[in-house]
Image (tube, rainbow, N blue to C red; front, side):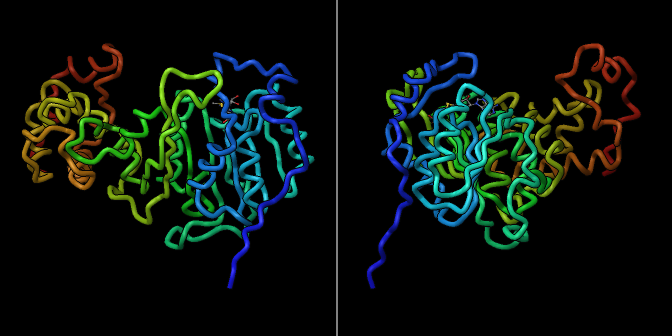
Length: 343
Ligand code: SAM
């Protein structure tokens, strides 16, 4: 049997380069716009998303539509694009008219956009099932992409937003160094908070790197394409905020013993005692460095912190990054009543 791949045909359209020229779409610095013009590269980004034929795709930040064209050629059932910059209205409308599948355009900020009703109900899958036929794809500005993935990890943890449809996968671009941090294994020089956060909720793959020179205008850095698939069960199954707080504190002093970062979870007077207690409860050598901890070991620290909070709920409000005035509510008090090591 021979299988013939049929790609949706778009009627002849001006090239992306012509569109940029025609509509005078100068890249705006404050939106960190860098456009991809080469079909070979946009096709590769879309291929990294896996099989999208007959599925629903949401593209974030389509700009003049080069990745959108590659998506269309893969015959999805429907595409939704979310674009902040209204200047792209004309080329996107032109693409919607030419597209053989429905292409809905939403003008807005993806950071605040709720996707919990955006796809067809019939696509919904249980979390324990294989991912639904829904795909999120985007080449967003670096600063937006990193904030967005943290926000989306929070949604994944809570199974809200697009993830009320199940384990929706994402294919997104980041500055290459950020992509490397996301997948960094223990012991690697790039291992950081982002590695633990991404790997706790997702299977993360750095698919390939796009050289900066492939973009117009050319950014200073190269770009990593990362594919995320939410895990059936997170490694650490605790609330997002608690995990985020522990992981942030532990990585506060990346090169020091991790107990040093753990101590930052607690007010001054109780700090050292609780930090050692947490390591004991987690059955961890306090002299391990943060980048030597597996996600599972980080999870044991989170569990230990959670147990301490069950005994001393007031400690949950302590934030070493809060203003001096707020911290002093703890640090100036006699905190000895907060120290209870009978856990
Ligand atoms: N996808 C196009 C490409 O690859 O050539 C454009 C990529 S450009 C790096 C990023 C795009 O995201 C721009 O079109 C920009 O206007 C849009 N964008 C930036 N911030 C956004 C936001 N918060 N919500 C939606 N779109 C945004």
